[in-house]
Image (cartoon, rainbow, N blue to C red):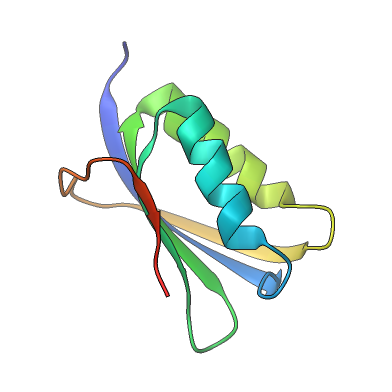
Length: 92
């Protein structure tokens, strides 16, 4: 297992109403990444990802593409402090 990291990722474009949050949750669970994903009022989607550095990068890479109906225009990511999440949750 590699280094544990935490990232805040915000995705812009056509990312709400296209199952983007469910897509991120599924990718996170596939790679053992913990945290949450939620819609923001500006139309973007925000995720907090924690886990093995390689696993987190796999999820971020998947988020750059998104599910078939999505159109990602921009993705911002920043390193943040780990919060010790267990599991992965879709927030409303």
